[in-house]
Image 1 (cartoon, rainbow, N blue to C red):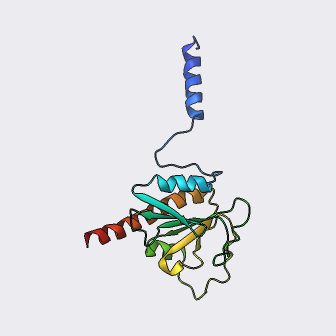
Image 2: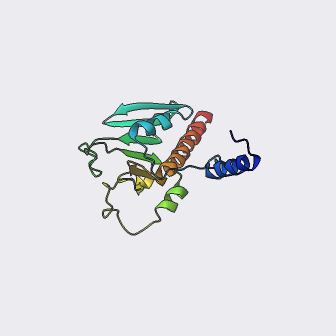
Image 3: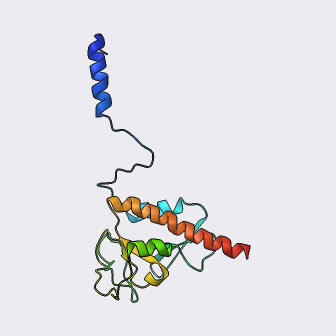
Length: 171
């Protein structure tokens, strides 16, 4: 491209310095958004996942153990679940069960009954309004840094469900 060696070296250094450096596991998600279809695709890409739909929810299970889902997705209110105001355009909620220690680390025990929490907030991890005692948490419309965090938590929830499944089939 350039015939002058010095110019070529300067150009190469400048171009190299301007290129982003890729490191495995590093996620640049400052402006990222994970819509419902992307969450579903991510969950369905995990091994041995089965799903079903009922009551306006999509349920995800590990294997054929359909007793307790490790993750559910809701995108509309119903008579029994309307605290998140999911009838808003494009709003969905991801609910997932994590290890108790992870749950306690995110939501330390308090004297509060949770009634002061605003379950309509977008992109905020909260204890699930009904299943917090089972270490379930939720988030509406994850974006930014919470996309990577949600993916990590989905892997964890899948692993919890897998361990429960493996205990059941070896009994």
